[in-house]
Image (cartoon, rainbow, N blue to C red; front, side):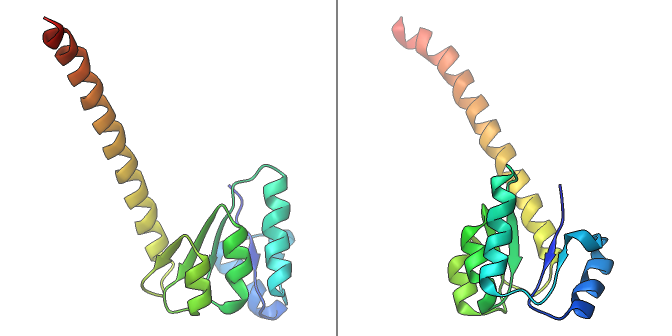
Length: 130
């Protein structure tokens, strides 16, 4: 799992955000235009990476649409919300962790339902056949 910072903000702001997240300088991009962000997502995808893009502004919309999973911060631009697969209602990245937990819980529910259906069919079909 690699974390990247790709922002339209200046280099100082990008370095501060990357430092707070523990992202190395070589995976930090500053002064990026919307097409630059989309291009980075596409480049990462070509290497076989599954890309989750988190953004909040109009300039993030192309990258959100390109990503395997686009996550828009709810207080951001409407176009970013429209381009994303998931919209977080509050402007907190902590909600991304809550979203992950929800995904894991949903997956477990699906597996549990498959197990129940399989068990029901294993027992029920021979009984129905007589």
